[in-house]
Length: 297
Length: 297
Image (cartoon, rainbow over all chains, first blue to last red; front, side):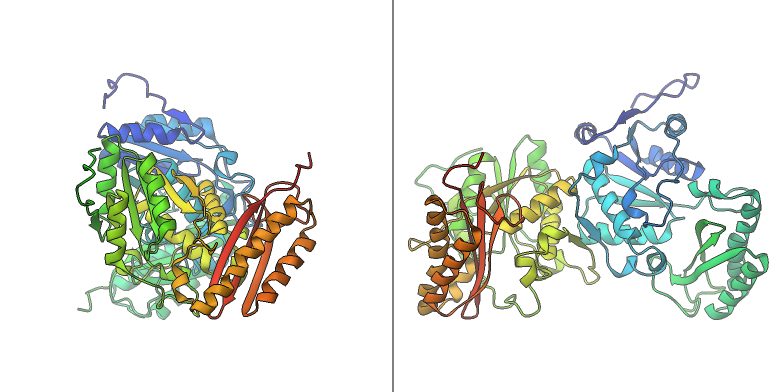
């Protein structure tokens, strides 16, 4: 791949709006290029850009998709309000060396008779699935469609959407999808708030309150490091931390064996603590991988 | 493609049991070959062979898959009893010029944690879907998996499974699957019985009775040719024909606009008459495309 000299302005990625992107991707693969796809809903932040840089490091051709997918929003959720900033996104993408942008129209993605959905089953029905019952079928469906339209070698996702990565791994395995999946670390603001396109919804006051979420995750990590193994004990302390901050409607705090959505009662191995909360009207999720003081075996 | 001289024994197709088949298919496509896939559940008859010959005519590389897919059978259905004859199938395939057979093990197709299904929605819930509520999700799921494992250009299906072709077209469109679909005519025994692997279940007595199904479809065709447009009238006469034969448990007779599963009350354009019935313990389906005497407009 030709590289621009360092003084040149960043090169704008080529933008595709329809299924024509498929042929462009296949041409690159036929030419022996490794292709990376970073699916996004736009309104890009440093978290997304870190995925694009990971793709840039591993691939010859990097494609970002930008599509605010209606089927992963519930009827009372923020589909219409979801932040959109296409021109700003393009400018950011250019700085990462992204080669192509697939920004399909809604008509390209969902024809008037669309009725097919991918249902991943139990792994999508717990945690987020309890609060957003149609969310993961929307995610799985749109990601499968993106995979078909952009037949890349590797797809990049952020660990912030922990359960999404579990759901998509299940789909990739169950449906024999020829994709490798990379999961990249959660990026955080300097004060610890997990980066999210939805953070713009928060008032300054709410934003300060929201910090209690990551504080509670760090508290869990510290307690586990100090030798506490009882999930019930840790959860109570996390809930107290969040309650004392006030103004946070905690939806769940879950302790699951890392790489699964199976709950654990004791911290005996790598454990992901995942939580969701509403701060004002803004729903936030976050998670942290914690380890026991010494492995049990 | 090299052709065997006419006196040579038919060449045995190469048999694949795992996902390795994908690389073989991709190699052929990279070499510019057009690849055709004929998905089957084995126990091949002339109907299947006609699909293979259609693929042979249009493609450079022809692959048959053989897999009795458990997820498209209901709990009370004939999965275990379904006829299996792998060696006989291979011998028949060799006569068609089929190049590869993908005969995955059940473990290759369904891992122990498999939980992902493709749901096509309303088009799979009527007609067959009323009697076999999980049938089409099993069909859609396994066909998607076969498409991923055998990334062909074209896939061939028989019109005998009329609703299946509607369901799969919906899936291909909704999920942006890069497959062309060919639907080939129903093949029949000399006495009119639609060819089906399940016909072997019929006793000689049941087999004679089963002829009433195609007779009733031909009656519908004749009535429409004679100018009858009322579906209700035609259906009653079909039901009488079947009832007079006796020993047939008719499950439905549906009149739908051809290419859809939408019922019609009047024969005003190309109309498919589809039916299902149990003859003894054997469930049979059949259908016929009929036309009005003169188009309404």
